Picture 1 (tube, rainbow, N blue to C red):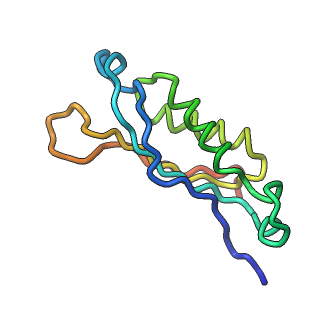
Picture 2: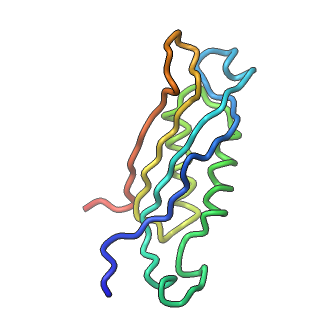
Length: 125
């Protein structure tokens, strides 16, 4: 069997954090929803049933939670920090797809959320 692609997913993580351009946003906080896909070759884990052959989604969650706890003005900055931290913590991560949405953003719009999406690759080529 040839594995063409494999990803570890964390879907609809909901965290309370203090991000926003307005000073009040960094005081009162808001809920954020995150979706993350980490490209990694977990074919070894498929064969061995051992955690060492993949990325622990519990450890990935801990990395995300720690970065979300650091207040920032821009979600772009938060996204960059999360991606860097995940790539640093997991050397087998080849790429990351990350979505961050702020629930009920203070912009006078009736929307479920507003945020950013980024895809980063460890390697160029």
